[in-house]
Image (cartoon, rainbow, N blue to C red):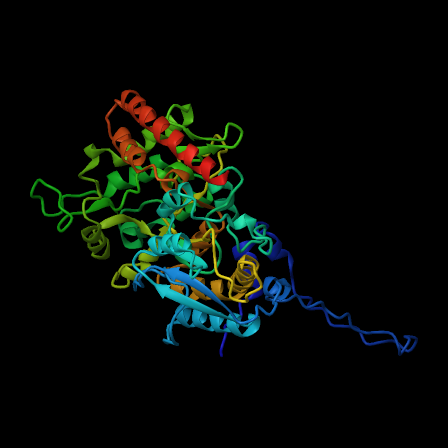
Length: 498
């Protein structure tokens, strides 16, 4: 079993906020002076250096004997484009797949348990069946975030923070997700370093380096470093390159040059980069809040509209994702808006390309910026699970111990393979882009409106930012619909908690 060991340097770069500390650690190159005649021969002539473990979280986590229990997990049907699975059947020769396979076999051997994955096209429905029938044959479910609302309001989920054997303060449990998605103090979403879809699903902008050079545009990564990467700057670049190449008087994805293609994701990437969100949770009032009337939210929305507005159809085209990717691959699009995992579809791109986060509205107000994750797959914990060891108690304690162990090991070991082999090795064309991805991975945003099923609100907001000056009147209609939906959702959640 060959496991790649994560380097200490990468751990420091990827996960510690005090990046400058890395430069302070210098190798001592001075030679040790020979002992003089008066030196005590029993005295130590060299100072032993403390060796810091490269796997501190794995070393520290508990590794109890789980008594041969089976951890029965559901996962969606496997697709080759995104890592929305938790295990692999065999060694494949592909770096990340093999690292996941080896990790899981190590968990089984160390903890004396079995990880059994059932691939099912409807994991949420299978979870419901298990709970309703009382069979306890589902311990974990790896399913899209948008399934959360229905599962929570109908009372099918146990909050992960109820697991007494799980320490969710550890870095392998996503801290941002816990803050943004907790409802009434309960954390139903298990964003743990186990699967990798919550990294693959980060929204990013791929950019064509050749077009930047040909048009002598400012490097977006340099703009980002200098805190000048704004919506206004991006719009200037989009306008500069958009060209009717065949001079036929119309723009098409198959023929002409665009500033931006791909997918728009409505408001979220630029909104979260600018420190605002459409829907938030008010912990004091214990209710969902719609921020349409907030002054800053309106200001940011107007900036978003400057890009998404339909009047920009000759510069921005989201009409066909696949055609947009081909335009970017052919060197006819400056920016390509997609999920990070789409780098697997860009291997045919001949031009050098990089990755940049979405721009923000302004840096002047000091708003916190984060990076939006679009409908990522998450773990769900059923309200009832099995009792494999027949101790008269459902196996929640054992599941918590398994999650701690697999999360700690992934954080220390397997995540390095994801970054180096899957992302950087196949997608990123320069070190700056790799650093951009690492930064985004440490500060992600998860949309509570998307999670708790307010789809009509999101679609209505999209219309709102494209309403050409009719924002206020459109917003009033949205607010009325939202209040009804939020009130109904809250009553259902509270009833199930009681």
